Length: 233
Image (tube, rainbow, N blue to C red):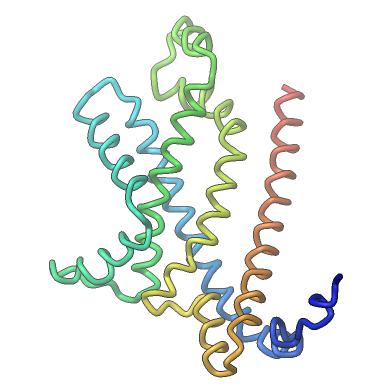
């Protein structure tokens, strides 16, 4: 019944020795991947927080541009946007110093839209009574956000924000299309040299998986620490 399973030539599917020999080269690509991911996430957090707050502004000339930006970025593929930045923007006279910079800019601008929605939903999840209590204490809008709303919204926003960070890490693979030598690009180089694409792509997938497991571990620890801090208060 399981003869087909025993007849599979597993060495054609995955070559452990090739994976081990190629690991140092792949880890060099992983360094570039993490550099892009960390910088992109930082800028996406800054821009996304501003967009999320602006998205709720009572002034239409602030609210509608933010809504339009978020709608455009969420409604277009990241790969298309990276192509526009890397191949289209130079036509306007704007030249990126490297493909890595173009990748960071593209990923940051795209994922900022998703961060904005996380920020907006987290702030809206804070009970309205918190705003009213702050108003009774004659606290201004900015002070209310900084001292009351954002600390509570942060706990709510942690899980989806870490999920977005995982997506950012995986999204860096699209930078390989513009010749950024990150993890996937490095895997393709080895696959082209050894003619063993399956082994290299499976190895790359496993490395991405391990990175996301580590991110998830930090997420759990941060959530526990934050919840413990709130309970002490």
